Image (cartoon, one colour):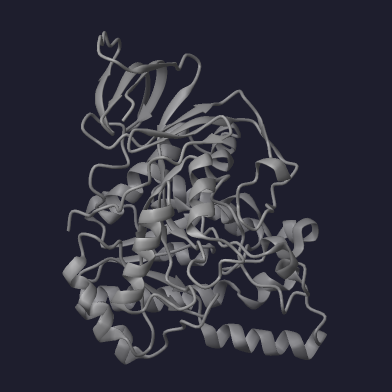
Length: 447
């Protein structure tokens, strides 16, 4: 493996930014110092004027393999992730077939081992009748990121509304429980009301009113109550409403929290005002809602009631998204542009670059107890990204790496650029070019 010495780069890590030299050797960060005088063989990179970030860890993606590979696959989306500064992903179980048995779960790990240039983990899926199978995952709790419960329907057919099953999982699993929280009855009732009023003439702008704040809150409240009853380790995904924020606290350090929450980049970037421009392209579950919710999410993110930033990367084909509202599937491809989106937010003064790194790299590592990743520390895996905050990136068809081939950001000019991404010390991406000679690794957990 090639070794690298990155000189004179602004290292963003653990709440501060300082110019250092960084030596990457044998897949790890060997040394950090103001100046490194190293005589052994290495490739030198001049980092002057640039920033070194720990690779982002995305705890919620849908890479669609197996079974939905006309939309995406692990190989294509891992490449897009790495180009976008995401060095580790955790992927969801609602594929075809769903990852609701140990055999199907391991099949996905095998695919990733052969095709992914990013590091990876996969959630075990929960259905109404597989509780015993899910609890078998306790035997591999150091090698599986968590179990995923859809407490509200989404893409696929994995709605879990059987309280016997829910109680078994919340009381019996030794893994982190990640939940998609939307109340199915409220959504169905809202949909029936909208159809009575408008027939089939619904549009994307109706989406946040059908999948409304109450649907999110009621389901999240139920999950929190179950977690408190059993002292489960609960992580609620893609919080999208102001009301839900009352369920979370910043009174404890993240490492001591038993209930944590994630916010996704599209809920921080877009609001319901944007449906007029983007329509179904930003239709997702939970829905992007009114601007007041976005502002409340930003406030809660900065004050640590919200713990992690992720993407919920969920690609569909362009043709699928062009269908009328009721037929168009929910989900947005985002993993390639998540770091650029948040660097833009840094420039807008939403938060500092140190806070961004905390929420995208440090916090996922703490939340999931990931071994030796998420920080720029001596001895840790060399998952790092070089960012040029002054080199703009214009999104175009030619530089979108998603298998679906489109992005809501096509034509958008980001003010920053990502020039290099290292995964386990391997230079996997450099200025638009990929080196896939090394694959990513299955991440492990200190549980």
